[in-house]
Length: 126
Image (cartoon, rainbow, N blue to C red; front, top):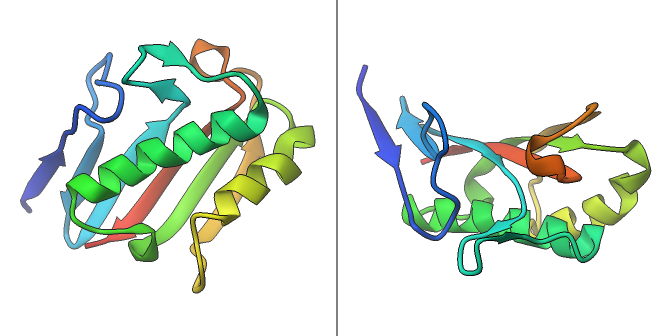
C-alpha cells in the first residue's frame, strides 16, 4: 500500500502526530477541521454559521490541494457541541453540495478542540 500526504498552508497545521489528509487506495481521508482561520490565526466564533463556513472553507482548501472538489466527497462526519445547532450547521454545510450528497452522520459530543462548536471530517474519492 502506498499513501500520499496532503499538506497545505491554507488550513491549520497539525499540532500532533497526524496529517491534514491522506490519500490511500483511491480515497482521501481528511482530518477533522475546525473553524481556525489560518490567515488570522484565530478561531472564528462570530456565529455558528460563520464557524461552519470557516470549517467548510478549510475542507475546500484540502480538496483543492488534492485537485478534487466537494463532488468527490462520499462520507462526512459532523461533530457538534450541541444538537440544537444542527439546523444552522446543516444550512451552511448543504450549500457546499449540489447533488448526489455524501453519506453522513452527525453526533453531539461533550467538548471539541479549542472549545469550538463544530468539527467536520470527510472521506472523498480521488
